[in-house]
Each structure stands twice: as structure tokens, then as C-alpha cells.
Length: 84
Image (cartoon, rainbow, N blue to C red):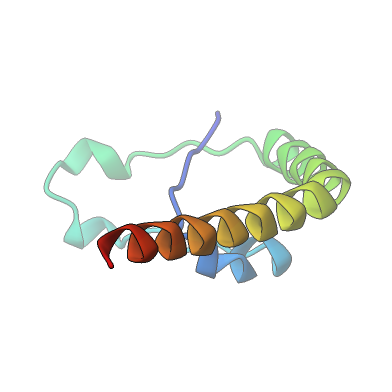
């Protein structure tokens, strides 16, 4: 089973610490959402693969974030100059 969880970039700690939180079944509005069957071997394999991919791409992600922030600042400066 593949589980997807959206997180903001600020929550990188979830990947670094390999921790994830699931909503308690009582808080869900669909009783069938809590009928989970886990394959421990598949989960461990997925976590191992995810860690490897994350470690292999961490440098690229940091460069991309740096480029994004630089472009965002340059774009804002450009707009401010046009508004003058």
C-alpha cells in the first residue's frame, strides 16, 4: 500500500526523523477510513527506498529552494522598481 501525505516544506523534519502522524479513527468522518491493513515488510521497504531517494536528492532540493528564493526576491524587486 502506498500512503501519500502532503506536508509544507517547513515540515522537512518528518522526513529527517522518519516520523508521520495519522489521524485517530474517532476523528474521521468515514468509519471505513480506519480499516487499515499494513504489510510491515512493504512499509519497511518503502521507507528504505524513500530514505535513499531523499538522501540522493537533498542537495538538488536545497539548490532548487535557493534558486526559488533568489528568483522570488528578484521578481519582487523588479515589480517594486516598475511601481516607482
